[in-house]
Length: 391
Image (cartoon, rainbow, N blue to C red):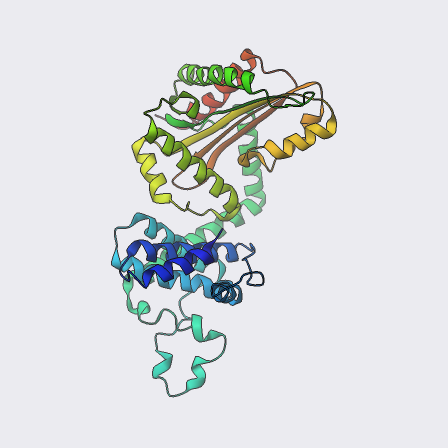
């Protein structure tokens, strides 16, 4: 990420256009991102190797504590939201910033002072570590809406803690085991009626050859694979919209832009990992969810290979695995002459949470019957409703 550079560039441009909401929003997003990364224990780039005036920006944010960064993010976003109360993306950022504040730093607003330290006769009050965070919210504390936002964040934190305590208990662990067994036996059974298939992926390789990627065969089978997906979605009674670069016509510029935006979003979510952050262009992503009339988008594909040896297979696995599958072992790729990996990742793009991750390592060639079986199984799990859920 380049949050510090984004803040610096936006600040310079604001000198020419002081009322630009767009530029201010870039700063709000960047402060939020820095806060999330620091609260999540992720490294913030230091100023050591940065040259020029921008080094001061890097130095500032490397010195701020996670608490101070979080307070700064809330302060800036709150002021900006007052300028444009209807901005949904900023509302989401602010809500999560309050949640971060409640989860990581403060159990109440009692720490913060409503007084302006500059007006106090005791100037020592403005020195020391607490001078920034303690007095940051000032008049905000008189705003009932501001207080309500923080109280809602505290309530959410309380629910999270109660849930954690339950699943740490004997009863909770038992319930979790039962849930996992049900999922293993019946699959996910999500009860979702409509999804978008985002640029399904197919790669065919032969590690014995110098040119390991079989481009011609990949292109041929890619077209067959799209047909297999559409056919099995219909069999599963799943309404599936296909967005594929391989199926686009020259005039389908809008669909191509949608694919690029969605793949960028997935890449961002991989970078964010467990931080659960909105994408950098989350407003545009939410617009796509409305456009396609579903929050659920699927990234699916196949890697088929003819192996040469163990080391080559392992190296290949690490280099071509798609982001949602990185946590999983590729040990199975070391067996047999042929291997096929089928993956299917279903995300709610409005929340960034994945609803299903299905991956299958199979020591067989990519026969069409096998592809049909895997595609139908994935779509059936997405479409079929839980037994206790009535339509």
